[in-house]
Amino acid sequence: MNFAAQLFYSSYLSERLERLYSPRLALKDSEENDPFWQREELHLGPRQPGVSYKCGPISNGTAGRRPTLIEPERLKDFGEEELVNGDVRIYDTKVVGSPEIMLMDPPKTRRVSEFRAVPRPVFQYLRFEDISAAAFRIQTGIQKTPCTYSRLSKQYGMEIYLKKEHLHYTGSVKERGVLYLLTSLTQDQQRKGVIVATDCNFSMAVAHHAVELKIPVFVIMPSCCSSPRLRIYRDYGAMVISYGSTGHDSQNHARHLATENGYLYLEEDESAAYLAGLGTVGMEIYEQVSKLDAVIVPAAGQYGLLAGTAAAMKHLNSKILVIGIEPEGFPLLLQSLKTDGPVKAMRSNPNKKLYGDLMERSLGVNTFQLAKKLVDKVITVSEEDSLVAMLRYQEFERSTVDTEGAMGLAAILAGHLPELKGKRVAVVVSSANMELELVRQCMDRALVLDDRVSKFSVQLGEWPGDMAKLLDTLSREDVRLLDVCHRRQGDKSDLFKAKVECVVETRDRTQSTQLRKTLSERYPSVCWLDR
Image 1 (cartoon, one colour):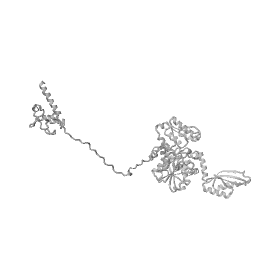
Image 2 (cartoon, one colour):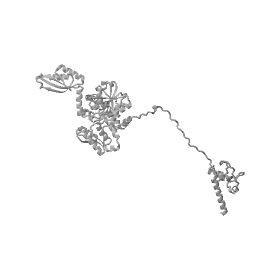
Image 3 (cartoon, one colour):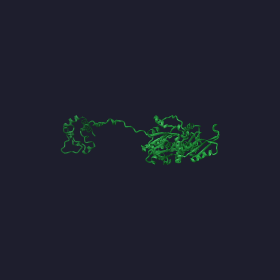
Image 4 (cartoon, helix red, strand yellow):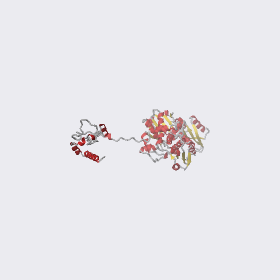
């Protein structure tokens, strides 16, 4: 390119830039008639006939706009409002306002009562869902015990159905709670094993079902425990260890072994799993006896049985009465209800041979709350009434139960529940674990309490045949002579008389009353000895 061409091109670019950045100058120059801009060789686009390339007057940047040098179909590449090859770059200005603010609707007017706090549902320690889950899990390991009509119903004026929980393998209802408790343990706990340290129905159930579930089980017993009881634990398959002279010594040793070896120390408490397992009794009774009016449950040492059964019964039918029975010598639940709180220390001395280790029991807070809410009535029965109830089981039901299992029937025999006359009642027979020698002693005592066995003394002369006449009188009255003692050395005033003591057994109180009347008429010296 020569010098003249370079000079021409530089002047052309300078004028173009000046016009582009100076709108006023562009407007002034557009009014002049510059022959430079009218040259044909500078127009790159097609020429339109009748159209002048000289810009007309400009008004507000729109009127008189010169045509672009770019083909019309190329305008879409740059935008319709931007003319790249023109003298002026023109934009359409749009005024954009602030975003519109949308106001919310005013709140609706609410009453004051609508602002009251909705009470949360009360936490239930034992739900019916837990009891039904326990029933499903233990159904393969626990037999469904019968609930049969009792022959004692006509005698006491009510329909009595006996829930025979003493027919379990270990003779106790506690198998239900123990089995569900053991199946609820983690695999690690089941692998390490469990340990118990009290001679009771709970420990026997743990020993049996732990072995059935392949769980190592250890039983720590004091030296005072009888050999037949230790043999029972060994027959179940548990590892039995004798330690200490008292129950407290064995319990402390068991806790020590559990801490050192990782065993799980088990004792009868108010755990939710244990109570749910015991509550399955209520579900079965409801299924087996239709149109039930009341259920009588022993509460001695088994407050979990009472609470669990009440929870199931009240959920299925709130109109069914739930009545708890306690021994007169240890009314822990009754005293707790009077003081509106669990009694920790009970000043009482029950018969340990009959009621086991009741003095070591305690009433938990959750069990107390369940009993307070769901149990309709709690009564106590005497030791004598429980023994007579054991005798009734022997005679009418052909079964042997212990005093705890007989307390439900004892309340009916003693006349403590007159409101149940003509009603349909279920009685839970909870256990039947008692040593044979103790059963014999209880039966002998019960016969005396029921006026079936009597002891009397009478003075007879030394004449031959006086003793035979007395025995003939007893034979005519159809009584059984159990024992006779003939003492010839009497008082100084009765040198020629002998004292005879007899122990006789009658069928019932009616026959006993008739015997007393007959002997009193024939032997004025007869003396009936105290029981």
